[in-house]
Image (cartoon, rainbow over all chains, first blue to last red; front, side, top):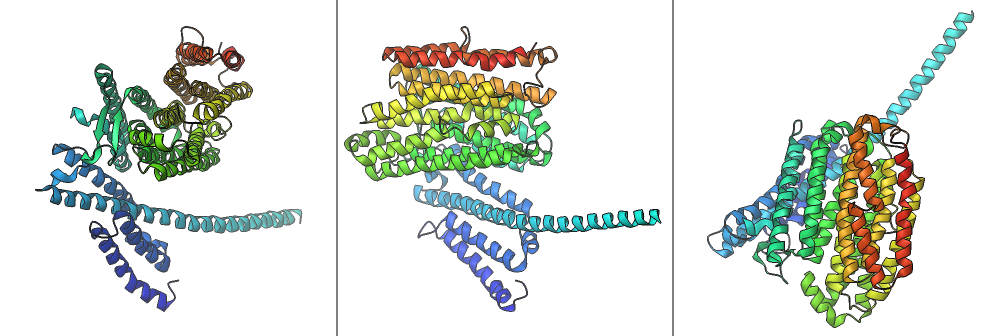
Length: 170
Length: 440
């Protein structure tokens, strides 16, 4: 699809806008509709769009697999460690009241951190799912190509064997 | 720190999973898993002794939100008993996992293997600890999803692990969906998900058809998860083709947790007085349990592969637990719990021993264990003792649970059922005797 100018240009304009909107949904989630799950999916959509337009390899280049695994784990850990922080400050697990100077600000900080963890993990899991299944397709194509080549090779070797036999007979 | 123990019980393995996925290098992930399952075992023992000494129910409010609004973790007599079983077996299986995993799984996948391993343990511990019906579903999915991945990891050695894992995934998902459909009906009726609150509010609407439908969906979903006959077809291939360490962990704990959840919901939420529970559901569970005991045992007699043989016998043993539940009495419930405890220990021992055989002489089948009793006497003794306990020979743990089971049945004058239970136990002899003969 990278040959189509219209798609390429529109995608280049849209991708930053999609990411920005994802961040809005993420950080506005404690006041209005939104939150980590929705924002994560929208953010991942930007990467999916990028990979669909510019190819899987460039998509992987932008967001390497190793980094993705790190992001998946970091999101979960951020969530868990926020809970442990409130535990260390003397309250129950995930009780955000103690995280700030007042209970309100504490709740605010807590929900922000936890939702950020959710967003990070959801976005990177979405990207991982897309790359895994999309990568599977190129893998399958590669295998099919290899099979065609192999068959051609076999035919060639057979022909060679035949001709050598003929030559030997001569 | 002591008051946080109920949450730490689940939290340690749960947060250990992402850490383990990131660790590189030989045995690092395994070391972390060992440390965390060991800590979880220690915590469960402390909780058990605390609960036993005070006799009180420990309640932990997550996020400081008390019971009907927030999610609570509850340690009562039942969960305090089941937690050490799960975490203890998880600890032992983790010790054994090091060599088994090294032999059977590609070194690149070790970190992810232990991440899934810790997740499935966390999911099982969570299902037992939580006092919230929807939270049970979440943990059910955590433990199941990681279990599917663990079973599929057997594919490196045995490609049949892939269809086995896929079947397990489809049926497990159907089970979880049924559970959550039933839960949705209950939530619609009562407006709460807290187990205690649910049982109180359910009393007002217990004669409605929706409540009975909810019971049917929840029971059916959990029957699938606990592999009660005739919904057991996913179990045998999944256990037989999974990596040895995974077979040991799951055969010993996974279905038991579902049995526990079933008991918790049927007796704790719906209650014995719920219309239709004692007669319709009780009779169904009883019938399926006795049928499962026969089918599992007879199928086991025909197996030649040791892993499949003991997986089939799991169906029979789960049938015995179902009989205990179906008796719908205090003694029956006690029998189900005792058998749950004992069977978890037996199956863990047996499957770990099979793993040890697999590590030493290759795949454990009737052919390969021919005369193995001389080469690896210790492993074979473990199999012998475990097998005798499965039959329920006196002086073994299995005898005690069978005794309670028969007593529960006789208490309610189910003479025929008691006789059938006895006969199906006796049928374990040819099943196990066949493998015994090969030992010498």
